[in-house]
Image (cartoon, rainbow, N blue to C red; front, side):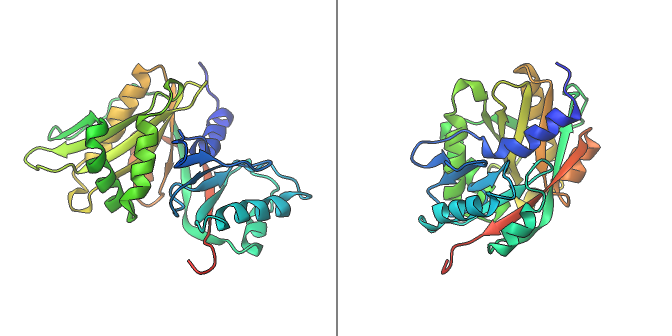
Length: 266
């Protein structure tokens, strides 16, 4: 299927708020004109709102409604503002409502040739993870992102148990001669579209610069292609993962600004 940049940018903007759920621990929010995820933990890495299609007339009301939803559970969350978010001044409205603009912004990247050759370090092994690998996966992601392992316990469980239409998978990476897992990553196919999302990925700080991240990208692209995807997208940090992905054939399509909100007293 031919995928134009408009379709890919739309998936970049919406995919993080349409991830697999884990009932009771990670669910979709119910609010008019926006999409989002709400969990049993307080972290913007898993509590995310975005894809706003609001008007100048209802934006402030919806923002207040969403804030109250998370406030009632004393949880922080991040609001992602992408190229199609409306109204156009929603960023300023979020600031007025007590949100903080975080830096850096997220780089939305896409690749439409999943067969592109990628040179990987032969000392790095990337394999699909099972439930038995969950503790290792969550430990790596927690250290890589500097957050609680419970955040990733929820996200990893949701990805591993996702319904078939997501074709989701979790990966764990090792380096020859090192006994512990050094990398972990998620992959989620967008339901109903031939596009895969390269979701959370991290390498232990002590083992960065050895090609672990590149190997995880290569394995996920190969599996995405084998599962019928024609393209892949990623939300990348412009200072870390984005430069690597651009060298591997990804293109920058859009930028998303991230606004953080934390309940009073947290």
